[in-house]
Length: 535
Image 1: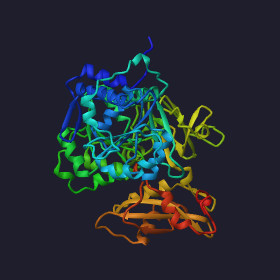
Image 2: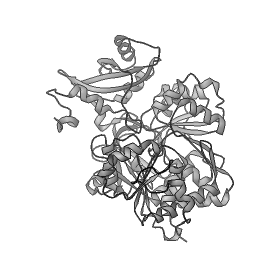
Image 3: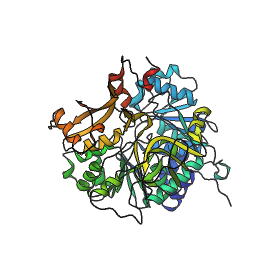
Image 4: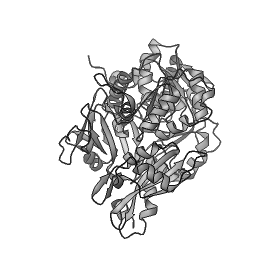
């Protein structure tokens, strides 16, 4: 018997097996699995009532909330495709995504009402604007808000046996730092098998409690919406990341695990309020979204008393590909353990990862030879929405080409050394900006740092460090340069340091290195390739 692989089966299973267990905690509201399933069925019915048809795209513009989590299942119950939007995008970016995806419904929170009003006149396909958490107060909105639509709706649950597991279930857009965002197509099958692989990897069970610190529109956040629901665990929603609120929710709800980007982990370990809270329930903090450092992993484990390790994945891979947990047969101790736990890691079950040279051959597994990470798994996307050429560029030879440059050691642990575009080529030598950043982050006074190439008459380009110091801590440029030179080969070290109040970031927390580089390359005779078309 073949039953279609669809994430709808996750919630239906937990609603049958754990109907009275707490499924979702969101502010003062708590929902059991029976209530969670009922609300998603009503959402499916409400969307059908708005005219949503099979395969239509339904967009959500909101922060982490039980309503967005319900969208992960309710939109699929209507036979439609979920499109979570990055809440930090500019109006023109949001309009582009909604038009490109041809979304028909947009559900949005009160805090984004003015934003939506500013670009709705530019939209071509959106017919229904649904308020999520407030009463409709303008003629262009539907007459009932989200909860009112649910109350009035007839529950709708699609026949599982009629689901095409290879059909589109979710559409996520990449950050688009160098071009227009691309829509990543994830199928029912992609999502189902990815969730199984993640649940196996992390030992997720019905007693698991996850704090959703990462936004559900982020590649590092949405996978938990499936794997935790699958086993009947408890979702604790966090509307906005604030360190003290993280601590309060861990203590109040007994949260056992959470995922963060490095900037969030740095904020947590440096928050002076942390000792006030009982955080003993916390068992695991996973760091992803950007490269971590051994220093940060050590600080998390020391100050929180929980396991901390990195992981790696992309929007295109649903997202998890690797984890830096210690696997059976591998023994680490001392500083080596923190170095390995801050690495990219080894492939999780169901995933194959290789590091290859330009000809597609595996580089030696010596921890030194550099190549591009390629991967294949059941979670790799079906392709980019309406972009067959871009799809063909990354799907070559039966493998997804990530664009991340890495080494592989004898134990199968990869270590990303940089994105192709971020490698600094100085006097013919390749310099990993990530390696330099990790070294500088071991300085006790540095809060965060970005290393970028700047023009140099003799070497073509050289590294420059842009540093944010911890509050109340100061250092001179010469002190930081000497700190780096005592730990790295001199040609890898920054030639200069600039102190900033903060680093610019994308909506998903990644440092906007391209924006940082523009200041130094604009108007120069030697133009980096990434800026050449924009002169």
